[in-house]
Length: 439
Image (cartoon, rainbow, N blue to C red):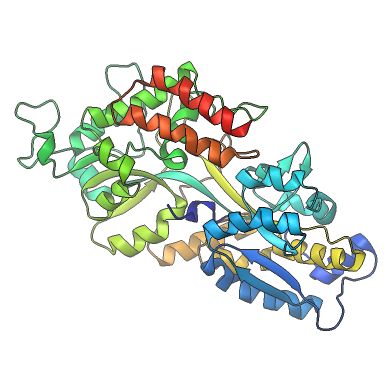
């Protein structure tokens, strides 16, 4: 899947003085470059690059420092990163996600952002900023972040007499609010529901809940909601626990009991649940803020849909949070380092991030842009005010080769969804496979 879910950036503080002035206060003389020189900044999103143009033009006017933007597609971005690290050819500032931060920082090429931005950190959303802190040191300026959420086809939910804002998953219980509503939403071609005589799952015209193999939207929140973790405090994969088994088996059973689309299809087609939702055939889609643009475009007013927190577990609602930050590359040159620091400070501030918020690119990391972001979505007919910053979010992959490790784990966990294995048998194998990848 393309990774809008990783389209997350950096933030700083409100009321910043000019970028050059701030850099001058923290480092001595104002930041400057030789005539004709400029900074390079790399991102993986054309949409974000377009929004940045406005921000960086204002930065250049204020600081006198020009910034050249370059865009690499997602796959090329990460294949190029280690090559540039080895060759010493990294741009001055680049986007970074949590999965690749540790190994890049270990190469000793990044600037300590905490030394540059200082107290401005207090203006950022904590759940986004902390994902870029390693052993107490902040290495990235968070720009935007995403979180998982539940989207409801309000027409179908109302017809079923349900409430999408009060859903809870209780593995081990005979039933629970999620299973009850999913059953009421699911109907075959004759309007029969699961459990009713003559129900034909092969002819289903409507589906209940999107229980599919999605680490960010589904597995992460359900695992955390049951009190489990994907990785322990030391970074080792740790999902093969009693809580992990319960959460994964619960999700696979939803599909096996016909309360979710067929797992064999959703494993092979990652967008299957979203496609069913936008065509009005799925009542409840658990996804993330990264999908909001697609939903607006593809539903296109065909039915009313609403946003809600993720399904609760026994430990409450635990949405997974992704954050992308701007990191600075150590140039081993004092003047250039001042210029990079000025740019990072600008990107962390309100005016540096405003175009991202107004173009609805992720959730703004700067708290003072939250209202502008909500107002921008309101003009598109979407009420995002229900999406509060979570106090206890599920965390994304972190550490060297953690993304590859998760991929290896999901290949094994897919067996559970396809009904080829149980979670109790498969999760220890999945965890071992992931740990072997991370070394």
